[in-house]
Image (cartoon, rainbow, N blue to C red; front, side, top):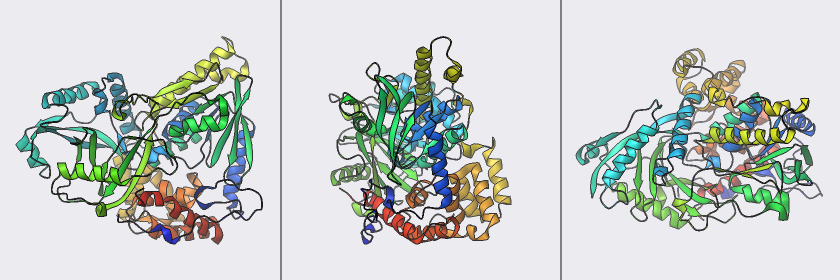
Amino acid sequence: MNQPDPTTSSAPSAASSTESAPSAPDGLTRDTAGTPETLLRRRADALARLARGVDLVVIGAGVNGAGIAWDAAARGLRVALLDKGDIGSGTSSWSSRMVHGGLKYLEQKDVLLVRESLREREWLLQAAPHLVKPLRFVLPFYRGNSHGKAILRLGMIAYDLLSFDKTVDHHRAYSKERLLELCPGLSPDGLQGGAAYYDAQVEFAERMVLETALAATAEGATVLTYAQVDEILTEGDRVRGVGFTDRLTGERHEIAAPVVVNASGPWVDQTLAAALGARAGARRMGGTKGSHYVVDPFPGAPDQAFYYEAHRDGRPLMVIPWLGRYLIGSTDLRFDGDLDTVRSDEEELAYILEETNRIIPMAGLTPADVRYSYCGVRPLPYDAGKPEGDISRRHLLVDHAPEIIGLISVIGGKLTTFRGLAEETVDAVMARQARRHGPRPPRLSRRWTRRRSSTTRMRLPGARALDLDAFAREFTAASGLPAATAERLLRVYGTRAADVAALAAADPRLAEVVDEATGTIAAQVVFAVREELATTISDVVARRTMIGLEPDLGVPALERVGAVLAEHCGWDAGRVERDIAGYRTYIRRLGEIG
């Protein structure tokens, strides 16, 4: 594949301390005494707050964990959100980046899940319009598909009826001739017509997770990254908190809390096993692997998304415009390997290329056309008796009582429905605590009966303006930045672009471009560390500035990013070097086919 060669850098250096060092994130080890004073103080303050105890600990800062922390904090609970890595660094970063109603769930006759997904899709279009945007899909009808033309048309009608409150257009049906006029790259063989409908896309899924976590902190939650929970503390049959290892220092800490929610995605069983040992219970998670491939525009490539049925096995596949390129995939295979190093394999790549070339014959895609791949594991319920495509996509809440009272695990969940899942989870948590305290809880427990979820009336931090288009016009005119830079800031930060621009206005050096491919400026790097909880260069490049989603994976910008952090944030040369090496190690899984 065509991607930068990361093998020229060595793996992260070993810790200089003679003590045993923990597994460190992205090249950081226990000799990182040069961490800037502000970051040390921020982390120390967070640890001090957590040492006083909280009402709820949420394990896992993916989209579901961040949503739960936000909902709970907005209701007045004292919340700690912990993750062994960065915010959104797991499954939330490796999806198809779709905010969708779940058209394929109609096949499973899960009408309630489709309705829930469509409702939450509409909320996201309003709550995060800078990140979540409508995307038009074409669904071609082919003779020989597992679902005939009539059934697919009925599915389209049902999809419209279930999204009666939507702001996007209804579906439209097309004859074969008209569809080929609109999509000339489609294979005409067996084509019977098709339909076009709208779902939505979140190009920067990582940013959506981050903004949800920032919304949680604005409500008072404490977010701590690189904090690996290795023990759920109990007293008899009741939870009393968690023990965790600070992966940046190797120090161990405890947090007192009466309730713990395990929202660690496909790592749910691993978290339970590490924290509870033999008390972890039966297997809950049975995730499936989904591999995606990023390619440049190719002959016959559509100007909208294709959603079609694979010829080989009938699986739904997609060709999706994304960041000026295309995302093709994905696979759906049971996975029992290492969740931290999962990657695509040659058979998956051959399957996706074969099916893409079949529906778009002039594409002629080969492995050499793939710029990079990424792969994630869907956090699905364990069900060994069902084919992968038939496993329910509905989330489950597992209350571990009576064995362990105060522990809830979240199984499943999707980008689209994270807010609803969070509301349901916090409802369950508060109901349990209210029952525990009785009808007249003591003063210190009144927050457990405080109020209902309010997140349906709230927006993510980058959507502060009701009229985002008007804000964009005013910002572009007043920012003093080149139009391309202003557009990039708006696309990544929404209304928070004004905060980034203010940094650049205060120091002209921060208006300098650090990455030509995206036009990212130095102010974004500083903003990531000061205001967006970034701790490593991987955090900055992969999940804050979004440089790492380019075909070069952000490698050409690494030295300049490091120089900005050294000059403006006080990072020493040793730390910058280790972080860059750590990022090069991190991107190996994006460039190799296992």
